[in-house]
Length: 220
Ligand SMILES: Cc1cc2nc3c(=O)[nH]c(=O)nc-3n(C[C@H](O)[C@H](O)[C@H](O)COP(=O)(O)O)c2cc1C
Image (cartoon, rainbow, N blue to C red; front, top):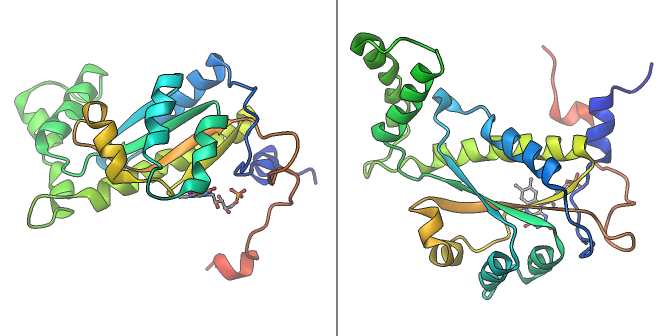
């Protein structure tokens, strides 16, 4: 039996460790990536994220500054990669944020705008509340949603034949300072570099390596 194309995509996708600084991802491919981020599923459709795209040389320079204290090995991905996406989460997702989702749902034809129906939809916010600590921080839950977008993006990049490097090796504190205005209180703890691997060096020719299925999957 032929290998399913999804499996081929996932086997050939590799986190690039060395980017070709001469190549840029087309705006058509970036558009697909942006839409895939926006269309990502999230708990109660909360969408508690912001995706900040670092494309210009000026923005890259600002991001490079945030590698002043740690994770130096990741800095060259910023310089050599084509784009970087900061995936940020809202650490205090509140009822006002969810109301925006509910009103968008109504505008998109999912539910009517009677106050009874709107209130019923809003009551789902109790789930976000159940994830809050005593200070109304629900970052652990909103951050988990951002990782769904990251996973989605990695698969989309594989289909587009574009390379990517997810990076937790960043400095959230310095990123918060440098991009304070753009983040507007959101927190970035993971970023995604997008580009094309360098023809020499890096890990592009290494085989994919994962634990055997018996160690990670059980069918009951
Ligand atoms: C959440 C996450 C964070 C990661 N952080 C980094 C990072 O900071 N720097 C880096 O070079 N690779 C990073 N990686 C890449 C992993 O090392 C890589 O995905 C893993 O070794 C599997 O290799 P593959 O993606 O080529 O299959 C990260 C991957 C994930 C999913």
